Length: 119
Image 1 (cartoon, rainbow, N blue to C red):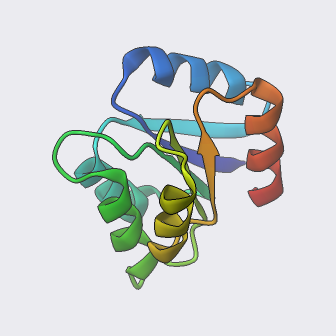
Image 2: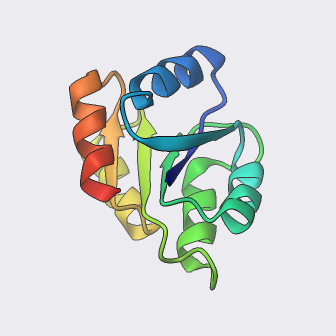
């Protein structure tokens, strides 16, 4: 079974994303900050990471950079999911190693299309 790591500090966004992901045949693990994301990526070795940017402590960009540069985690695709979706944010996300940036608000279909493309 595939495994998705959701990194989101907002409980409402967490619930919505988990509800959308129910139609995907995957186990979902949720953490709510960048530090926990890096630790979970090492421990769980998920098939995909959905990462918010604005979080307490280590932000999503720094966590993404750490994961995509990590010896044991660099193969895991990271999709940034954020309301920060200007062109500069998209470029910066790619420079940190993210595969794509999904802008909030997103439709369920948009999210599922991206998730299925990387699983």
